[in-house]
Structure formats: structure tokens, C-alpha cells
Length: 210
Image (cartoon, rainbow, N blue to C red; front, side, top):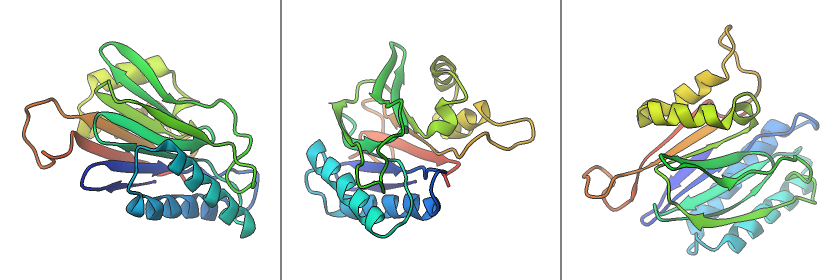
């Protein structure tokens, strides 16, 4: 997991290595590092075709170097638009008083990065709800979307990732699965803060996926 704050936008990336093949921690780490390097030089962050090509290039690189397989979710936002690309079962949703809106949700893990046949979906839509939650299957597989929605509505933004992780934490304190969670919160118009030029005032993460 990693995120980059540029002058006009923010980019986040989450990867979750597949347990099927050896080398998955290296695959997920490589995918995130390459995504962030691409993000640093991407002057058209709201063109989803560029993010699709980025993931395809990462797929070829990981496959050529036998580094296992991984999912990858990349999302850029300026607080008004959302754009990116994704491969695998990391899901993202917008949450607000009006309900839940999908950002990305794919039910299958076929065609992962590192297979050289990665199935990559473009992402492009408006950022309309106050909160975005992007997380690996370690969250979505073990709790209901409705429960996440209720938690978002009842929790302060600074405590939200930990609260969401608590939904899937076992009594022992362990987790059922590798879990990576990003939350993104839109600032109310007219408020002042350390990111006045950036309409997104809070990006937090918890429990990076291995």
C-alpha cells in the first residue's frame, strides 16, 4: 500500500499477493512501487487508459521476472473526479448519507498481475459521496457492505481504518486474511486546513496487505 500527494491530486495504490504462487510478497511490493513511480511522472492522472497501460506493463515485468502474482488497485482523485485502473478483487466504494456507490468491484481473481494475461479494468467516475473505502478482500470477504456503511457513518475519519479493521478482527486479535484498507474523506467546502488546495483532507491506511 502507498499513496502519493501531488500538487493537484492524490494517487493511492493497494496490492494483495496471491497465495497460489511463490514470490507473492515480492509481486505485491513490486506492483505498488512501480505504480507509484509511474504516478510521479503521470501528467494526465484522469486518463484511465494510462493507468490501464501502467498495470499491463507491471504485469509483463512481474511475469518476466517470475515474481509471483498479485492484485493491484490504483485510484487518482482531485476531490471531484476519480480515475484509475484495477486488476483483481480489491474493491472500493463511496459511502454517504444517500447510500453506497461502487467505485470498483470484481468478483473474480482470474487474470492476475504476473500471469502476463492480467484482466485490467479502467476506472472513471465522479467523486460524489463524502467517504471512499478501498480495501483488499480481507475486509469485504468477512463483513457486509451495510456494516461498513454503518461504521463509516458512526466513526470519526481519523479512527475509521482501525474501526473497519475491527470488523474483521478475530477474538485473538488476528485477522482472517491479509488486509489493506485506505479511507479517503472529502473536506466540507469552506473549511480551512493543512490541505486547502486539495479537496481531500484525510487519507489514512491501516493493516497493509502482505
